[in-house]
Length: 315
Image 1 (cartoon, rainbow, N blue to C red):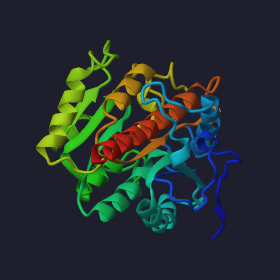
Image 2 (cartoon, rainbow, N blue to C red):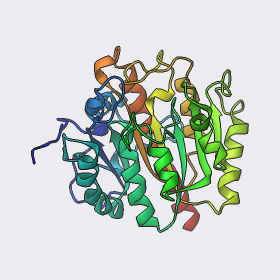
Image 3 (cartoon, one colour):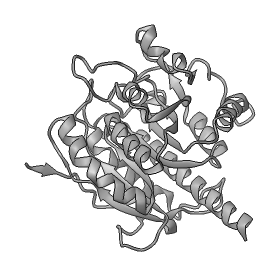
Image 4 (cartoon, rainbow, N blue to C red):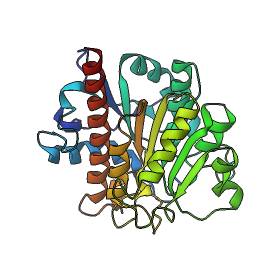
């Protein structure tokens, strides 16, 4: 079978390519968009996010006052077949365990169908279901994908059905797309929580978002702080901030809102992250790629800061 890996000539934050050194964090791209339902192009997202990250210069984060660059490996884009979704997932699944055993991983998509096999791998590694924070314009809870059993709009439903997640600790943020009530409210009906984009209108800074932050934290505490995964679909942002995506939805979140939440939740027990659905062919002035690079950088800087705090507390 012919395989296509859309390998980037650059790395995130210009860090060295994977060298075998004992760095705590790793990053890999999944350049695949075979299940998009509107505009394809997310297969070029990993490359664009990496290149946008080069604008960050020394990468010292203004909130966490550190750079994650010295703690990070970039493994490039994983080799995946340019075929159907089952072929992609079959090729991806055996590549994940070794990376998860080695490092705390961040994944660059690609369309959102990559998240399901990642959650499966995390579920196997941790031996328990995960909590999830899911930024998105779309609920991704449809029971089929335009007649097909799986796609980038079904992964949440499939994750619930497979027992990969803790329902009460599944939080959706930014949801606003059209859809039947059963799909829109699926996560809430299963015991999770949803903060729609409408719920968040006019709330940007930490004080204004304190209620959202407090509810997320309380849910996690009530259920024993399970391993927490972050899945960030760039179309959670309004198209004014992220035009370069396959299914843009007006009325979305601002970049400030997402950054505030990432910064304020940075000390939680995250075990991994993906950033998906960046589609450079539709971007303007690289706005979408820059936003994605900033989100990934902020997440990594927050994880490094949490690691530093833990080491200081144990000293």
